[in-house]
Image (cartoon, rainbow, N blue to C red; front, side, top):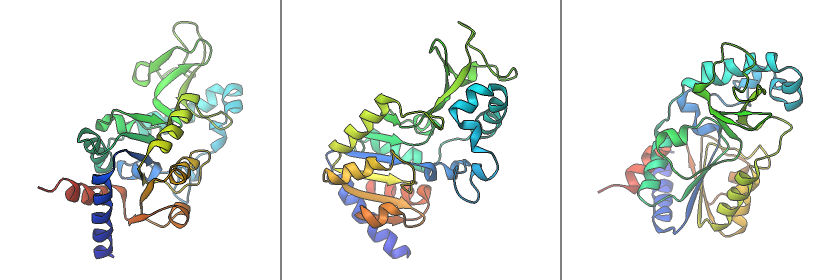
Length: 251
């Protein structure tokens, strides 16, 4: 297994070195090593919390109750997470011209904190809050969460984390930019995503349809592995990306 991973990683490194346009596409699995559990699965957040608190109609009807859980999950717990090796390697690849953009399904801002500059957030960002009345935006750390639900200091409107709730559409800019990147990519590097959430899961499929080579990093085989992946690197995101970095940047 180790020899196979090393051989496949060398193959992936050569493909990345020769690519003129590479896009990374990341999901919950890349942030697990930062202490952020996935939402789905037996140890996911939805095994501990009722996902109804993130339904947009419930949020507007019960903002106080919804915000109590939102604060607990996204600001008391997940807000302390820091980038891991996988985030830093992608940032380094961008700096050295081997990566053109990151499309992420995650809302944790860890790619930006690791130094990535071109990041398209398909589902929004928990580190930003949005007034539902006047659309003023705030950095999350600027908002006092001791009084719930938080209100806009400009108009008194209800504040909402600037990520997608159940029942909301994908932000148009993020949607259009993500699919545009998929169409341009010569190589598409999938990391920590199993292809279970639509419409995000259609983005790598679009890349494949446009001729991109698909490199996938995941601990287990996924729907992508069976359908579109060209090179499968089996393992945790941080460990595989560290190995990839050693091969890419060896002197």
